[in-house]
Length: 218
Image (tube, rainbow, N blue to C red; front, top):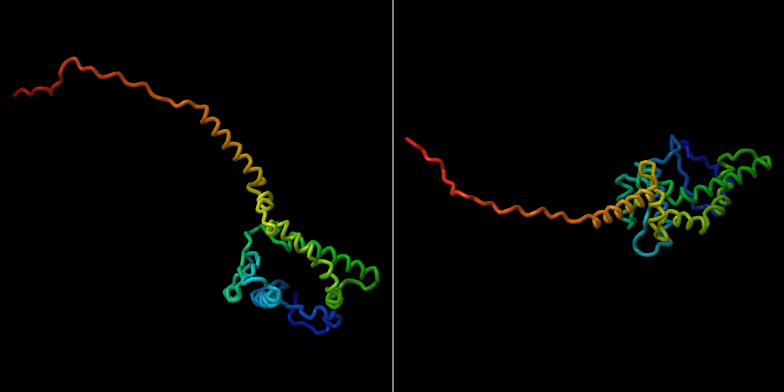
């Protein structure tokens, strides 16, 4: 969040269930190299508890803070395979954008509306952290999380789900492929209908008189 320091009073009403909460501040309110690396260590710790197998996959966009040497080296040491999403595809390839964030905004609005109706007023930092656990429990359900991976075609693995949403020069890629496939079939049919052209044989050359080089007179 935007700020310079973290005030203890922000967490006065924080429920004990959120003792694993990670909060960071920056001048701009956006993530930076330091904040991302702190989050990465936090993520590694808690995903490591329920890890199955040797490796884990972390889906990231191409934000500069995700690509620092420290972050990538840490992932390598912890057997975390980083998969970068192609540019301009997070709206249909990132499970958080596709499913989770939409539900989060919905339940956040419900809590905000409830506070306004009860006369509490707009949510400040204290009230937000007090309501955070309720918003998380409503949003981060197994159904919502799995829906994000399913709509992105990750699990079950269905690349066609993504290909049907790609746009090339304003045209859906699926339509482009169908048109190209149709042109290819028509081209094969034309080639089958064409007859192989065999040029006629030239008649044999007949020489009536023997030929010799011109004589040279001196």
